[in-house]
Each structure stands twice: as structure tokens, then as C-alpha cells.
Length: 556
Image 1 (tube, rainbow, N blue to C red):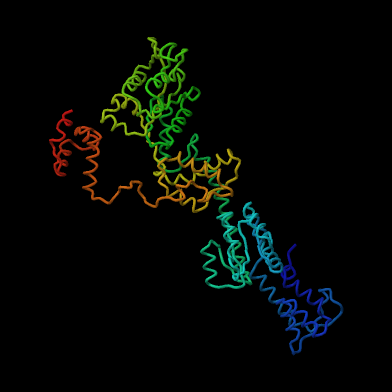
Image 2 (tube, rainbow, N blue to C red; image 1 turned 135 degrees about the horizontal axis):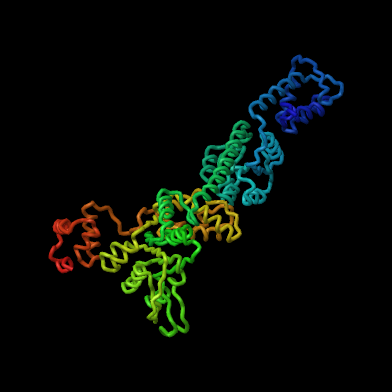
């Protein structure tokens, strides 16, 4: 059924109807005193129209339920009818917006009720209260993301509720309402985080536009969140999340090499996710039903590492009370992942080379040779090419391992993946800790994007895990992040000794460091630098080095 544009328009028609019922038969003095005591603008307007010393047409109003009485109210009724219809046209009634539930916090019951009716007529379902704690509870529970808060600027701290609401939920929109509007008060409210500063009485058109804009914003955020959840499912590659071009290239390359039973070298900084890539390669390989054995080469000394990889027989060394197979036997037919292979010693590298070349192993303390068929996936955070030139890694083993090489980018190289990773870790730790954290505040997101992330994805996961434990609201704020992120160093570079240098100075210092790493061997230094030995000699002479200083190293 279509609603009547005047009868359903709220306070104006209601006050007019009640006015006609109550005051039609009262004497002039009683009517004046009653209207003045009500302090009702509609009543006073009607009273003054009634008291106009002009001839008015006598109108009969049976629709209002009045007795058969003629009232000098024709001009007043016509004026109020026009005003109500204009209000109806300027603030159209819209369907209920379930996405937005405004909270009205006002200690004046009349104003609170009037604003509640007005917002309801605009198609929303507000919750009104005169208790600040109740309003904060609604904000903290996430039920109300928009609050109309009335304040008195003469109070000692008129924006105390604003500060408390923003501490409960930094993303809440707080509209400050006041009858004592001042420019200074408006600027202070906005500076402290208010979404707007509204003078009383409220502008209905502006109020309707504000509500509709916020409802559209929250609806947009809800749709974006649904798309992000779907995107998270689509972009998850066997437990690895990423949408950056660098990670998509890693995923594509991993799919290609997984189909072939060949050795793979994963290169990248610590915490970038090399083990996850290794597991993904195994899961989509033809031997995914076989075992995957993982060994951290940097965690054990050579004797323990040899026993771990190759196994041992009883009595091979002190404490060897029984015979045990090694990881190569355990994962025979499957995959062995060697993490931090660059940390192994040269003798251990020789034994690994024999496994790759001959597909055979010997248990510690046993002369028996066993045949194994395993795929070897190695990972390192070092530049193995430089290690080979420095004499710390076997060149033949390097070439055997690096026939297929995949570089895993650092988190600083794929900052666009941070929001997706945060969402992934939030879902993971919400389930683990029984939390319902919806996301991060904008300022917390900004901090994460500005952090250099030396620990890469592993550091990000630890940050989100800790924040999920410490957060008390629906959103993680800066105060929930670790202390080093709360008081981050604004410097872009992490090198405290950094200073602006010319390119010639940079080249000179870099050549010095490479020569020191190569123990003065200019041939190896030239190979690392990617230049000829004569070019290196020319640079050294130009920079004032004593070219005879490294004669012994150059001949090595």
C-alpha cells in the first residue's frame, strides 16, 4: 500500500493533528501559554497563524477526528501542509538499509526521539541511548559503525566520548552534534577524529546524504571483502599466497618443473617461504604420494648431519645403540629437501655429490652401498656462485644442484602481497585463537607497508599472530603491534653508516669488499664483479691501489 506523503511524514502532521484536537476549543490566553510552555516550533507557528488579525476562511476538518467545530485555522493548515510536502519531497523515504545501524547518543530525550524518528523515516534502523557506556558497548561489539553523539562545548572535555569511541574502534564514524557551533570546536573535533561536526538543528538533506553515503561505503566494503576472500582462494598456491608478478612467476615455474623428476635449487632470503615452495613442488609432482623428508643442514654438525642423511649401523659411534636408516632411505622414491645447503662443509658436499651422481649412499659405519632414487630440492640464502668463487662451495655440486633454479623474492620486493598475506594469517589465527578480528585499521596497514621486513613473510606472520593475541577489539590497531613497529625508525635504509656517495666512490668501496671476500684473489674478484681481470687492474690503478699488493692472490 502506498504511504500518504503527509500523514506518514512524521512530526509535522502528528503535531498538527494533536494541535487541532487539543487547542481548538481553548480561549486565546490559555492557548498562548500552553504553546509557549511546550516550546514547540510547529505549535508556536500554528498559534501565530491562528492569531493573525486577518480574515480566514472557515474550514471544516472532520478527518482529524474533531467535533463539528469551525476553526480559524485555514491559513495555518495550508502553510503546514506545504511545509510538510516540501520536507517529504526533499527527504525521500528509502527502503530500510540493513547494512548500516546508526547509534544516537543524546542526553535530551526529546531531541533523541525526534532524531530517531527522522532517521527511521529515511529508511534506517537506529539505536538510541542516553548512556555513554551503552553506546560504547554497541561500538565495541561492532553493531554500530556510525554514532551521532550530542555534546555541549561548555563541558570541560566535550570530546571525551569521541576519544573513547575511537579507542574502542578506530574505524567508527562519529558525528558530533551541538547547539553551540563554533569554527574552533569543529576544527578540534575533526582533528581528534570526528567524521563530521553538525550544528543543531540538523539539516535534513545533509543528514540523508551522509547516511546514504556511509551506507554505500559499507556496502562497497562488504562486497570488496567478499571479492578478497574469493581472490584469496584463487591465489593460494598450495599454502602460498601471492598476487605480485614475482610470485606468480614463481608459481608458474614451480608447476613446470614439478612434472619432471629433476633436482631444484631454491634461492632467497631467510623467511621468504622456500620450504613452502619445496612442499608445493612435491605435492604437484608425479611422486606426491611418496614421502617428503626435510633436513635443516645448518642445525647440525657434520657427524650428526651425516647420520641424519645417510643413517648409521649399530656401534658406528658412541650412542649408536641400534641401526637406523637415513632420510635418503626414508624418502626413497620421493623427495628430500635440504634447507640451508650452503652451510654444509666441503666433505659433506662431496658425499651429497655422490648421492646426486651415482644415486647411492652408505650408512655410517657400514661398507654396504645402497641404491636410492630421490629428488633433491636444496635451498639457500647465500649466493652460491660467490661461495664457489671464494672456495667455500664445490663447483661441481653447485652445477648439479642449480640445473633448475628458482629465486624466491623477499617481502620487500612484493609489498602488494602484504594485504593478502595479512588476510590469510588473520583467518589462520582467528581459527587458532578463537578470535573474530575483521582486519587492521588504516594506520596499522600503513605501518606494515612502510616496514622494511628483514625477516620477510615469517616476520609478518609472527606480527599478525602476536597482534591477534593482544587485540581486544574487532580491528588490530598500532597499539596491538610489536613495540619495534609502534616506534619504527623513519629512515628508509637500514644501514646506519649510510651516506650519499658518488658512483665512483660506490664502485671503489664495492671492489674493496669483493677483494676482501676473495682474500685478494683478483681473478675470482673479477668473476664476481662480472668484468675482466684487466678491467679490474685498471680500476685498482685509477683508485690509487698498489697493484703489487695482490700479486700473490692473483696468481692463486
